[in-house]
Length: 141
Image (cartoon, rainbow, N blue to C red; front, top):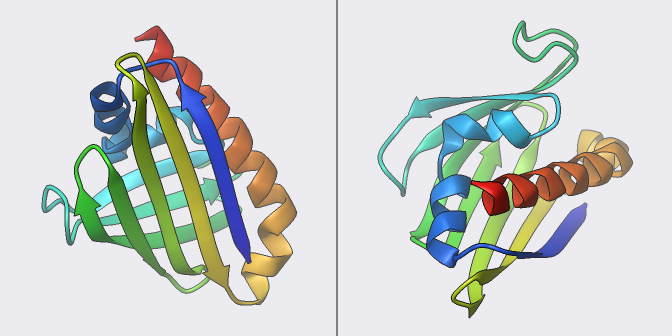
């Protein structure tokens, strides 16, 4: 199952990178998600766990997504390996400067397994809505 979204953010690339690479704050804009940093290595090798579901603060009725950063090119590219029980595959975000005040942002997921295929419609809507929220948040700060 593959998803990819492209947005133009009205913010400088450094600002977008700093916001997206702040793993702990992703729960502020990712719908129904709580993010925990399991092992912070400041880039490559960092491990993150994200719980998405109903009542994410309590960890009820949802799934854990465990990830490890496998590629880290600050301000331009990050890739993660999804290695959890329910979600497996790869994810990425790429940034490119359009102008000093605009950034192209691409988010992609390539997940495998029955659950990924089953979740695709909801995951697509949730990620799209979350990235729109993230875009507005970055532009306003």
